[in-house]
Length: 526
Image: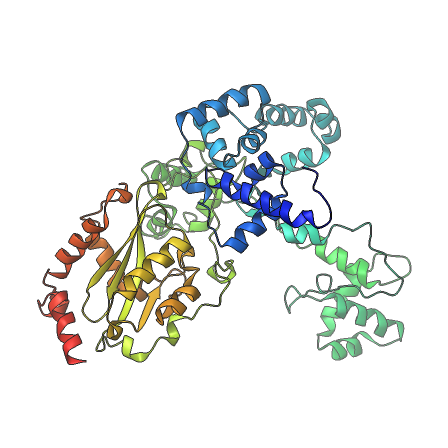
C-alpha cells in the first residue's frame, strides 16, 4: 500500500487517489486489478464506485483479445496455477479455466490411477489403512473410495445416485471459534438432537421419559399410557436397547436405534437377468427411463419380476462405481450428463432484488380483461453468447410492440435507462403498469417506478405464461432477430422499423385488426 499523509492533507490525498482510480477504471479492467495496480484498498475502491453510482460491466460480458489469451497461456506455462494467473492479470477466473480446458490442460488433481490401485489392493485383502498409505491418500478419501462415494465440485455423489451439496453456512456454523469462551450451564441448541424423524419412531424425549418413569418403578403398561404408546412398543424398546450393566439409558438407546435404521439390500438391476438386459437394450436405443418403466408393464403384463421404476433405472445409470449398466449408457441419455443434476426449488432461491417486488397477484383487475390500455408486458431477447440483448414491451389490449435499444450490455442500469426513455415517450394514458419476470435485469425497478410513475409487477418464478402476449411476440421477433446472432449490430432505427412492421400486421386475436389500429381506437375511446 502507498503510505498516506496524516492530518489535514489526508482528505486532499484521498481525493487524488479516487481521481486516479476512476481514470484508470475507465481504461478497462476489474476493480480488484485496478486497486492492486494503484496500491489502493479494494474495499475503498468498491465504496467509491457505489457512492459514484458507476456501473462496471459484468465479467461474463467482458471481451478478451487474442493477445490477452496468449499472455494468459504464457504466464500459465511458468506459474502453473490458473487462479493465480487470472488474479495477476485481472482476468475473470472462470474464463481462464475455460481457456485451459479447451486447450486440453487439466487443472485439477487426477486421482483415477490412485483409486484403481487402491481398489486392487483392497480386493487383494489389504486393510484400508495400509492400502491408503501405499497409494498415498488420506484416511477420509480412502473411506469414501471404499463406500463408492465420488467427490465433485461443491459436493459428493453417493452410490445410490444421491447428490449432496456442501452447505457452506452450516459448515462454518459448526466450526468452533477459539476466541469464544463457554461457561458451564450455558444454553445449548438441541434442535438437531431432538428432531423427530417420524411419529412412528420413539424420539429422544420419549426415551428420556421411559428412563424416568422406569426409575420411579412404573410398570410397562403405565409407561405406555403416559406416552400414548402401546405396551408392546415399550417392551420392545427396553428389550432391544438396554445395552449397559446399569440398565436402560436414553442416549445409548437412541444411538442403538439409529444404527439399526439402514436396510441394505441388493439393487434390482445389479444382478444379471432378463430385466437388466431389457433395460440396457432400450437405453441403447435412446429410450428414456420413464418410457422403459411403463413399457415393461405392456410387454410383460403377467411377469411381475420384469418391473423397474423410473427412479430405479436412473440410480442404476448414475450410481458411482456401479457395474449394473454399461458406462457408455450415461452419454446415451438425452441430456448427455455423466452425473445427476438436482432440481432447484424455486421456494429456496436467493432473491435478486434488494427492493421488495410486487407480485402479479396484486396487479389491477383491469389489466386482466384487456379492456383498458396502458398495461404492458416486458422481457429481453438475448443474442449470441449472452452478450447482447433487445428489450421488448407489448401492450396487453392492442398487442402493440415497442423495442428498447440496448447498445453495450443488458445490466440492470442499462435496462432501467432504456425503459425510462421508451416509456416517457408514451402518452400518459398508456402508462399504467409493466409486468416482468424475475430476471436480474429488472433489479432497478424501484428507480424505474419513481422516474415514470408506472407500477411494476413481477410474475412468479418459472411462469412465463403469466406474460403470454410478450412471450408470443418474442417468438415473432425471432424472425427478424434469429437466435445465436449479435443483436448489438441493430441500430435504433432498425428496431423502430421492425416494431412498425409488426404493429401493421393484422392479428387473429384482434379480429384481424392491426395493433396500430386497435391502439389508436383505444386511445380515442379513453
